[in-house]
Structures are given as structure tokens and as C-alpha cells.
Length: 258
Image 1 (tube, rainbow, N blue to C red):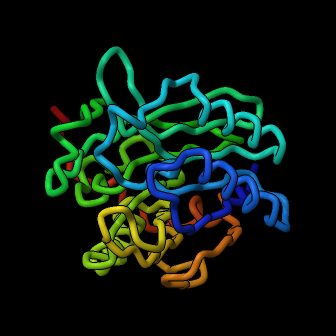
Image 2 (cartoon, rainbow, N blue to C red):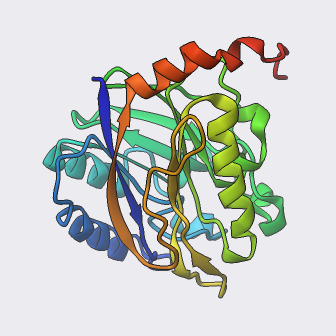
């Protein structure tokens, strides 16, 4: 596909209440007015950013993943977002990318947020993921990963860098700056979807969900604090034209991740 339509959903989250969040997002999906290829939800979209993993963790074939498969099939669109998963006795902040046919790609958050003690509860992921979807190559990452540019480095010619997040208002200026920077330095589209509202710990979130083209120009509507649904169109021609003309990725330093 030469174009990919991506729907950003910036929303409040019901604290530690997966059923309420399923109901909420099912209703939101039904409001999407145009055909879309991919629907993006925030980080930990079933619970909010909680450390109460023992109580709230699900299995990879649990209720939320089954719900995602059902909704992806219903809307003929992939759905992505992260949730708390228990796997062989360990807890992960795991992003799921559920294709319309029900197949699944996953990514475990690499950089656990030490300031909130996430590293004490959740096991850090070790592997990058590159998702192939409708002829597009997508690199999914989660929230705090945004602060670490080496992990996002475009050595695999991906087309889209995708972040799902619960990024609080007090540090939202960093979110704005780093999303734009990741697009520019990787010559890729960069999309970040964040939540709004107060979480169960009283932390406010003001959204600032955004999508940038390969030159760092914002192609989504700047909407802060409010809940919104917006579908944007990504174009392969834009990527190919600018990479051919600029060739910045060819001049990158070469090193190996450990």
C-alpha cells in the first residue's frame, strides 16, 4: 500500500478497570467515521500506569487480547496498545499489535520507568520488534523508550516509529521535543499516542498525542487535554522522496547494541 491510514485515540483511562476500558474503547471505535488501517491506543490502556501487576495482569490469550482480536476483525483494522501481561511468572508491559485477521505481534517495553518503580515490578524487554503490515514496516516502542534514541535508531529502514504512552503533564515538553526529534533523526514518520485525565495516583495527563513526517513537520491536529479521535494518512512517496534526496541515514555512525 502506498498510503496507510492511522487513527490516533487520545483518551482518559478508567483506573485499574479493564472491563470499563473495553466498553469505553469499543464505543470510541464505533465513532471512527472513515476507513482506517491501524488504530492506536495509549500505554496500559486497560488499567492506566499502575504497578499493581499481581492483581491486574492478564495472559497473552486473555480477555483483553481476545477483545482486541474481535474489534480488529469488526473494524477491519489493526489495533495496538500495551497492557500488563504475566508470562512464566514474570510481569511485562507488553505492546500488542493485533492484525485484522487475528494474528499478533508483540513487543515488551525495554526501558522500565525507574522513577515510578516500574523496574521493581516489570521485567524489561530485550528485543526490538519490526512489524510488517500492509507493505509498511513499523517499529513499536513504549513511553519511556522515547528518551533513548539508540533504541529507536533506524538501521532497518522502518517506515513508522510508533510510541504508546502514559506521559504525565509535568514532563510533556520533553515528549513534544523528543517525538519530533525521533522523526527527524530517523527520517521516518513518528507517532506518539498519550492519555488524558487523572490517574489513580493523582497524576494529570494532557495528551499532546502527535504524528510527525520525516522532516519533523506535525501532520496531526495539536489538541491538548481533550479526548479526540483523528485519522491521518501516511504516504510512502514522502518517505522515499526525502530519503533519496537527503540520504542522512547513509551517513550514520555504525555500532552494535549490547
